[in-house]
Image 1 (cartoon, one colour):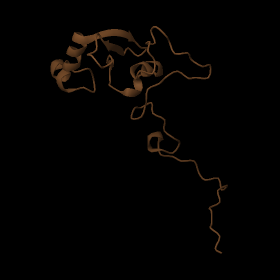
Image 2 (image 1 turned 60 degrees about the horizontal axis):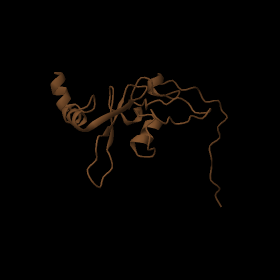
Image 3 (image 1 turned 90 degrees about the vertical axis):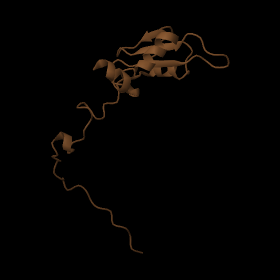
Length: 133
């Protein structure tokens, strides 16, 4: 079953084609804190830069790539974060993937995911009425 999944299920893991391409032409550059592996092409054909790609550890979801690795993948930075880590500001939070669709997603008070119970109106709302002139 795992072999069949490798052929067709690209959203859960790298396909056989990606694994073969990585084995033949890729060089491991590093891993991030989520276990994703980042690769670069050994040698690029004439007139083209080296390709860069990620093989996800688990579900394939682009928001699981941290900002520093995202910058390297998109050629914003020449050096990978293993060589030149992105400087963090004191006010920055830790990177988190998009949690939409998971049980950890944010749900506002009164939404169906939170039980569907809205707080009662407090009477401080006054509807807008346009001027009839």
